[in-house]
Image (tube, rainbow, N blue to C red; front, side):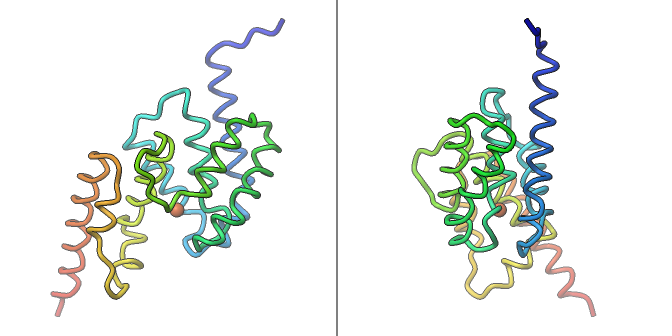
Amino acid sequence: MERICEGDRINRKVLRRERLFRLAKPYLEKNDLGVSHTERVLSIAVKNFTIPNELDEVVFASIILHDVGGSDVKDQYERGPEIAKHLLRQLDYDEVTIREVCEIIRTHHNHPKNPTEAFRILHDSDKLAMLSPEEFSRYNSRPGFRWSKVLDSMYTERAKSLAQKLLHRRMAEVDEVNAEP
Ligand SMILES: [Fe+2]
């Protein structure tokens, strides 16, 4: 019988995750924010959240695939789960994981009261990406846009306090530009 040590298991998971990202890229490239948005959400999640081992497949697959359906919410909800299922099956993800990932994709802009931990990590990381230097002005320039609503929607205190700091930093940058002669 083949003996798989812990290191091999982790390597396989990481390799499969990388393959999933490669398969998702042609879809993500078509989105307004491109592949780089997904890369930002991934790196924010890794840097700011503890991702339990037993959840890492669902968390990473949900992040990689959350916007695979398109740029607007309707496409993300309607097309996203089908595309995700197709890609995850190609890489032999188990059906329970596939179902959970598709459910998160189908609802990731909603605000359920008691979402799963994987949902919270994706949700808050996706919101934090809005405050990145690359995405900030896209939202800040919208008439009537309120950052307080974004901050209030965050589930974790860690994300909220980080968002507050980022918001101050971004606003200071806007002030600096406006003050330039
Ligand atoms: Fe997103």
